[in-house]
Image (tube, rainbow, N blue to C red; front, side, top):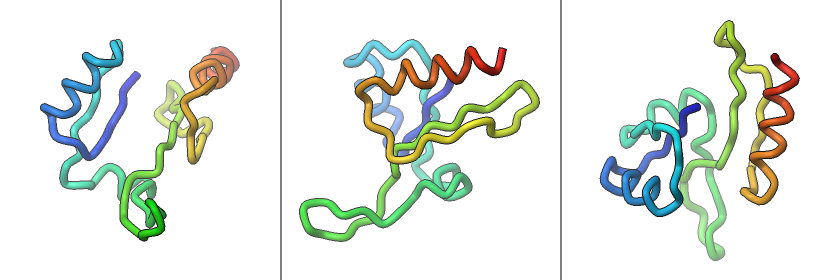
Length: 90
């Protein structure tokens, strides 16, 4: 399991430690990954339009193909959804 964000390595380290994440976070400060996966989008923040990463989960199968995509992810209950889909791949 991997995560990715456009935050700096230092910010990611603090986030990972704060939330006890058991997986690696990839640092994408140049935004190549988020643009390649088409998740760097225009967002509305407090009435202003800004560019940012749309929280998205990609489930990638054993052959390296995207098996499922969850867009505009809300954290509550999401891990259980992903686990269920992952079990369906096994």
